[in-house]
Image (cartoon, rainbow, N blue to C red; front, side, top):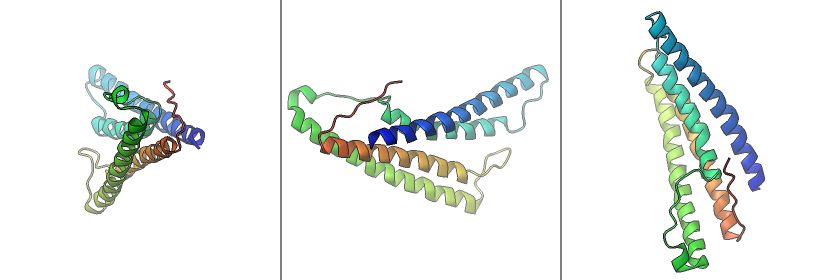
Length: 164
């Protein structure tokens, strides 16, 4: 199950995040060139860059957690033993799972509210709604990662992180 999850998370992170990062880089480079050479920046360049950055971050949250790229503090692992550490890992992952479900739900609701009330970027008036839904999907994918890791710890399976 974890291998399938790794494939899904990697594909989303590589394709959505990679294309978003490429687009963000292109917009930024073209905007800088237009501003410095022609004294005429791209209209709404900052709006576009911010929205592409949302795509990059949304695509990379679950990948960061799955690859072991997030900060982990192991203070008491050697002192309390393997059994206590196993249960604290399960509890912490469960709390994180619940918090991410709530965050994903709130982002989704905020996305619908943004569409309904016309919340949009400053210059180009691009609606924030779809980007909040993308953020909700990225957070939900990370919640699924935590749920599967929690189940693996519960079944005493080892979790291997792929530091790439």
